[in-house]
Image (cartoon, rainbow over all chains, first blue to last red):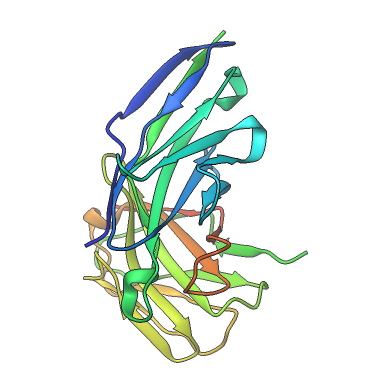
Amino acid sequence: AQSVAQPEDQVNVAEGNPLTVKCTYSVSGNPYLFWYVQYPNRGLQFLLKYITGDNLVKGSYGFEAEFNKSQTSFHLKKPSALVSDSALYFCAVSGFYYGGSQGNLIFGKGTKLSVKP
Amino acid sequence: DAEITQSPRHKITETGRQVTLACHQTWNHNNMFWYRQDLGHGLRLIHYSYGVHDTNKGEVSDGYSVSRSNTEDLPLTLESAASSQTSVYFCASSEERRPLLYGYTFGSGTRLTVV
């Protein structure tokens, strides 16, 4: 069965420092991996995705994520955090299947990122 | 511009009442999904649809139902609201099921309180 884990409920970072939000996954076959961000009282917004190709994926707002197949991880990173990056971040995974519900996105429980000035 | 809208944004209802949450998308997406978001649980799938007249149960479907009579709408009905259904509900849509190239587009959510 597909699953995704975000081991940290909250990550605290000082503004200007690099940030990492962790995600590990389990899926049969090649994964489709996504990161979404949720600001207070808003819906989820797409940040970036990994489908195939280069293991380092660049997305919106200066975020990037590194796909590591051997560690089954897809950590979200940013070289220099901003206070405005404070939000809830969700990792999601889908497998590539030819039928059934396995193509649906499975979401992690979310990690709250807090960036302090 | 295409969009996905949910209504109402906030709803307070009494235990035992039937409640319907609306979701309308103008993306012309075949796939639509309902999730609930609760602290400590993240997003959990309630029901989903891959097209008109197609509906499927998700992880937490008990007490909920959906119907899909057209491409644009997937209303979520709570047959008899319970306090455990107090949550924030999100509707989402996607262009295709496989491969999942574009991810999901989410509505802004409905905050439901059952008293």
